Image 1 (cartoon, rainbow, N blue to C red):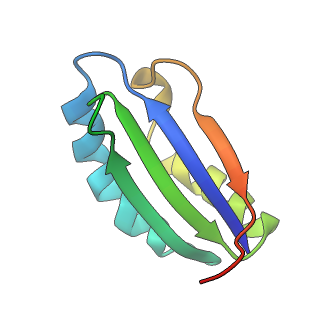
Image 2: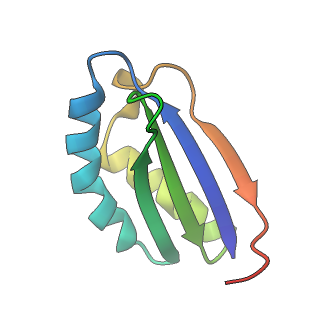
Image 3: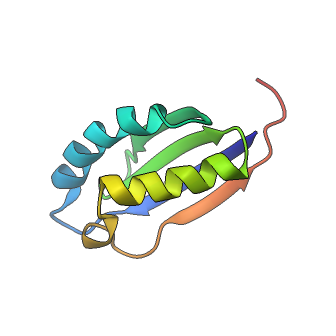
Length: 93
């Protein structure tokens, strides 16, 4: 199991566009083979910061996700810098 936290900072003024777009994308990502969890959250401290909690069965599923996400949305026009990715070791749950 691959667990991933992705932190994205959105360009000022693009927050609503990003949220609206990703609310349509999230259900599509959950349909990907190998996806076990995909949740979108927003920081309470900074409305430009969105955090995604993701789980995949293996590295191949992560690769499928990255390709599929690129087909669903062009994040480059909305992001203020590169995503911060943290891969985690799931110990219980």
